[in-house]
Image (cartoon, rainbow, N blue to C red; front, side, top):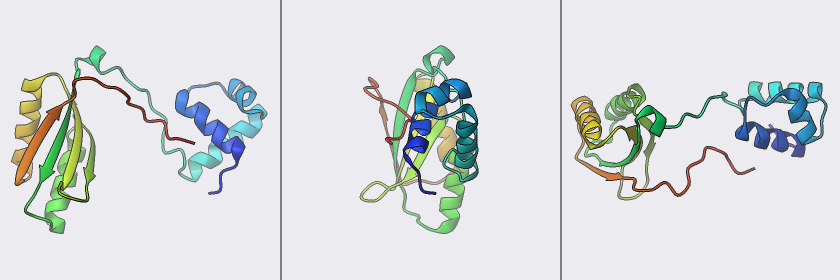
Amino acid sequence: MGLDEFDRRILRELQKDSTIALDLLGDRVGLSRNACWRRVKLLESAGVIRRRVALLDPDSLDLGLTVILMIRTNRHDPDWLDRFASATRQMPEILSAYRMSGDLDYLIRARVRDVADYDRLYRALIARVDMADVSASFVMEELKETIELPL
């Protein structure tokens, strides 16, 4: 789908606040309410807007520790990858998982209460999937974290 400047403005605003009223959205992007509504619906049907969510404060939910897991495996067959992908999708503490190029095979970002909670997550993960090496780093300070894409 080709995006014009109005689409980009709409997407910028929705990334900041997906609950924005259509009237206000129209004012901010320079379109009528109905024109905004039509464009948002087109962006949704084209898959540009995948879903609208609420961003929660992890500290308020006692999930103050971000952990980055670096994983190496001796197995690279489709069955192993399917089991690994399934395990990461089923564990709500795991926020993102990536297959990497280079020396590292997989990278996981997770949110847990504390180091003991990380240990529980680690044990649950290794019980589901065999891995050659798992290293973890704990985030000391978040300098920047966003889900807003540059438009």
